Length: 243
Image (cartoon, rainbow, N blue to C red; front, top):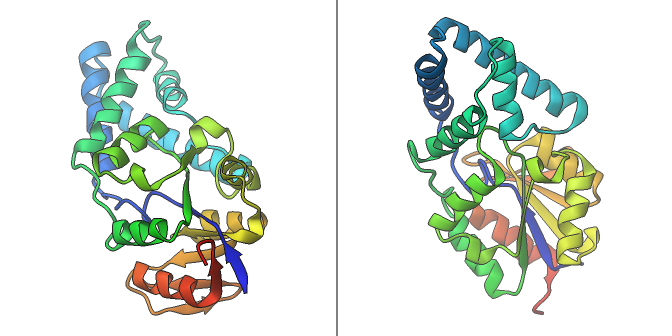
């Protein structure tokens, strides 16, 4: 039976719910800012926003990296052929960060109870999260407001690390922070292309959180419909640090 000391865990869709309106809120914030500061029409901003999204996706798929928020904002200015004022990039980045409160994120059902139960069993946690419009510090602040960081030994974000899931290096970095070998860890995430593929590359046992779906073995990994199911799976298939 494999030992379990550490769980690396995804953030969006795994710990925190993703609100489908955030992209629209961010777009409107950018439209308002650029119209007020540079008199740019909405249609031009919408087109630049779409082009930036394609550029961001290409970087993730082709180079396994995610651009930091300042780089994403600078790309928008470049697409619009606008020379920003010295504070424009920082100010627009700050406005985008504030959009995380419209509405504020909520925990995925069962997540906090699971974190608490595992921490009580002396299992450590490290977040491994790809960033988008919301930076690592912005996401950390959201987790702090929900009092979830008390369960987390470390948080690793792609915008700071330089590589993004499914790159092996971001998982290797997380395990180095907690001084744990891959064969004594588990990764929990909700996305096959980033979480499951990346954890498998790093030699970490992957579990897909497939909320609401029937538990199954999907090819070479386990998919479970909720946190109670994950807890039971770990209890039955691993030897825990505290034992």
